[in-house]
Amino acid sequence: MAERYLKFKGFRDVHVHFRDPGMPAAETRRSGAAAAAAGGFTCVTTMPNTTPAGDSVAWLREQIDDVSLPVRIAPSACISKGRLGKEIADLERLAEAGAVAFTDDGSFVDDENLMREAMRRAAALGKPVMQHAVVPSILGAGVIRDCAVARRFGLPVMPPEAETEAVRRDIRLCRDTGCALHIQHISCAGTIEQIRAAQKEGLPVTGEASPHHILFSCEDIPDNDANWKMAPPLGNADDRAAIRAAVKDGTLGIFATDHAPHPLASKQGGFIGTANGIIGLEVAVAVTYHVMVEQEGMDVNEWAKRWTEGPARLIGEEPDGETVLDLQANRTVDAETFKSLSRNMPYMGLQFSAWPLPTRRI
Image 1 (cartoon, rainbow, N blue to C red):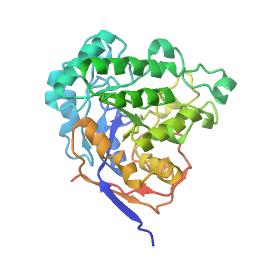
Image 2: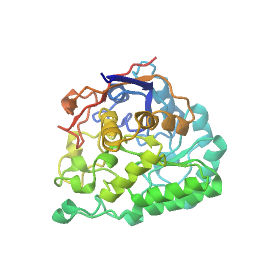
Image 3: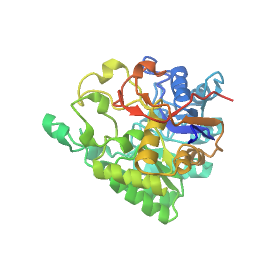
């Protein structure tokens, strides 16, 4: 009889939003950490797009010091003060206080000179810069990729160049500064091509695959429903295939959820005027196992490394803790059982065979 339970080093998610401080109705550190533990994670890296933004030592200490949480937080901090893209934050002080990376996630650092100097300073500190790669001037009002729903409802489309041109610029800055560059939530095949070429060149460039970008394509969107709205939006079938292939061959050595909780009111309606983002911590392991191991035939230990070694290497830590996977759980996604305070996601009602057991802090 096949083994039912598989044990791995502790899974970690290097891209989560806990909305704390600023939006406690969507998520707090406590509810977010509980969701992470329920999803099989032992460590998470929080994003600094809170209110106020995570550009201070006090903000970092709030993230790090609460040892009562069921998972450990290894936080990132802002690239720019207030995430406004106008002035570089005190990266040296933030790194000393425990920031594992720098990012203005949710916003693209559009000023090339500022980004170059930030990457130069981050390189001197040995910290990666994690970029939300979408050029605002190319994105425009785009909220969705070209697909049947976009055409049916006349929704403004995001061209893939909004992502690929951002990545092109930042790879050039990586080459100039030697700073480790990590591209968040990749959605386009063209981005994969650039990352693969940069890695062949020997540049310290990594990227992450989000569960929703490997499970769905934009043609799966059933209606003008904000629970399918995220930034960047779902790519087309070719984009999805390229991301899956890049996970398998190691070009993308990291999974990350981009867990983005929102209150119900901000996700009611269609793609226009509603918030970007979906939750993912409690389904991510099940989704990625289903797609990459069951559908794509990926070796299970290689799959697990995208949740362990890849994320740990990015933030300069060793994997710790333990994650146990139940291969015969056969559960249906039911958000009413979730620890997260939010319910915004397109996974409801889907069934997956393998689910992690809840973790605990050691």
